[in-house]
Length: 310
Image 1 (cartoon, rainbow, N blue to C red):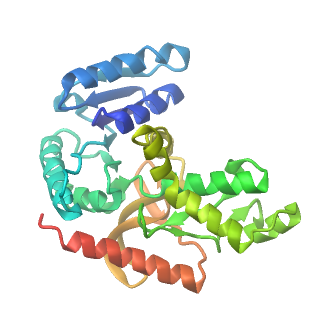
Image 2: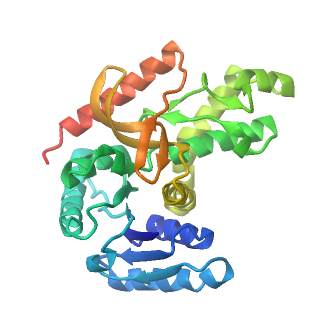
């Protein structure tokens, strides 16, 4: 499999590093406006490859992405002082418009994997500008939020996080929804397992975990400036599901025809991911409060996107 990564900053390089070490792709190509950065990241990762896989890692221009199976978009501009969120989105839309116009003749059958924030809006922008089917424009969405949810539940329950099956839905951001109602450990509902384990999920514990999921990025950014390892691993997980046609259920963002009464909005729900991209939605069981929260998240994203001038 041939993977392109546009944007060789911390997120793009972390994704490339994870993909290379896992041997998920045979070819990984970095493209960045800063060609020295792209070349340096490629060389640094290539020097780690002999310890773990046979991946080829290089840097190049857009032409080097010809025939790429998956292209990760981790490019974008930072917010200026005093700039509104909508203005930032408009500038990032211009970045995506330029990138996608260059990619169009090179990789018409590619799957786009969007990592640039705000990821749900950028996913919908990429879908509109590229003209690709929604199933082939996938945002990383809440894959990282769901991992954080499982991590904290695993710590509370005293079990491996990989044994916890729980999802965060909606926006990758303030309005995201932790789907407590559908969370499972093995064959048991989460609350039943917690009771058996002798570590009940009290309201205080649930609030603490909710705060931990929502506040994780802020805590990490305060300590080191940005997050990259978690999302890098999440992007590798999505690429692996595509590369192996795994049919894995992952919480990713795609333009969704209708959800909770809101039409055509990009947000995260569990979806089956394989060689064709995001194939089927797997809508979890929710209680009334979670349905209402997901509807509010969808409306927030829809309103933000509608306010953009593309």
